[in-house]
Length: 116
Length: 111
Image: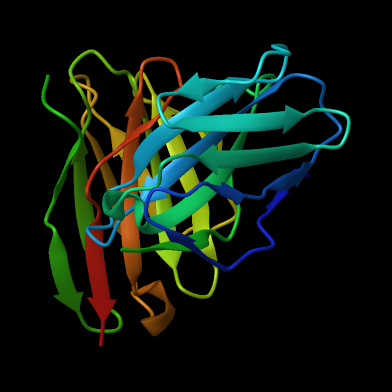
């Protein structure tokens, strides 16, 4: 069975600075997808960024980028130029490419606070 | 395009009752997945429906069930509610199950 681990329950960053959230996963599969979701206090889950395991290039979406290390089974999220609106719970998630369907396996989350 | 909608947003029930939650996916999306979020267990996958068929199922007791209609709207039902069923229930829709878009959730409180 696949597992996702986020070892940092809480993180803090100064506004305009850069922060990196860690995520590791365990799987025996070679093809899969990885995601980072953001859940602000409103509880609405928002997709931040996604990465296909077969792609070596790290995904980037504006101020958000990932460092995908397939051999190490690591998938960290870097937030550059942090803004107050980035404060939220961040979840790392895994989805198998073999199992047709939408089963996401989530980590426990990292609560990010942004200091003005 | 309208996002995923869930109704009701808040619900209070007592132990032993049953409850039905509804989810309307983004137009054109055929896959609907349900998740339970609690402080202790985090986010856990309940089940997924695609074209009116259950395609995936998580490790929840049979009290949790669901269905999907021909218009892709989905409902989940929890029978014989227990205190531990208090949670935020999230619904997510996707075209084929790949990139999932979440609704605002239904907060269920069981007294």
